[in-house]
Image: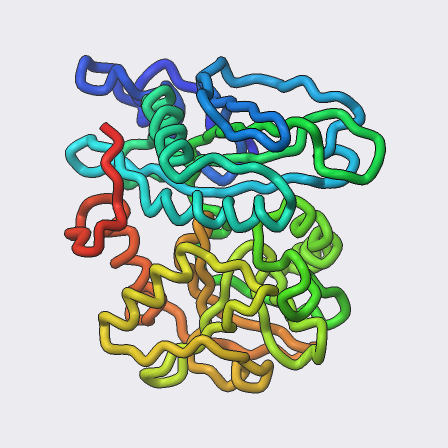
Length: 359
């Protein structure tokens, strides 16, 4: 998807005014989920065995790496994803950034890397948002997607943790993750697996090595008209796990089920939030194994994630059999999406302390 066009006005065809001179001149209505380069990125370095200290803001651009960097040779790296939203009165809110920091720390421990403290992480996120404030879309037009990266950038030849690490944050304004912007059509992938079953693998952390292996399945599925693939557990092939970049929920009556966090499935922050919201709304939410048969018998299926937010699934195809689900404005998924976005954008009171005011 091409980035939005650059405009010499407010992005909606009107002339610029003093009230909106702080916005970047792009067409906000054209935003998709592709990189729009912004002004600054944040960089902080640390030697192996030491702690991160002070980072700096530098102009967004390419970075220099040794061909023998740990990230390039052995995939020693993690990433996170979170968003900043503009409220109706122009303020900017982050959503649960401390949870991203905690998840990065868990992944860093697994990958033998130092990681920023929660305070360092959150402050760095605030700095990058403030520095790129003009790229935060107007209220209702999208969000600023923030991508923290933690990488082994030191040079080495043998198989070992890198001697130096770099923490980078860059950002980009985004709109809808899926280009069709409507309910999704999934295909169950029953030949390729995204993670080994159990607690011994890396499926439960945001390792960079987890994502490229899904390309084969997702490329084929999208070529055949599907939105995404739904992966099964590698041990039995009988239970659903997650889509390529989102967690999955199935609804039957007043009961909501989602695969349990067992070391294979990523502990999504949106997933965690939706469980709390649904519970507060009176639904029975269960985290446990969900069989393919149970999913096919569900009334409704939806997926969650930072990028997708909450998105209804219209159909799932399993071994050439297509099952359709409830969609539309009256579904639970749309009720949850509206509530979540309302909290994230300041339209609904945040009674749980999830949002962080940036400016």
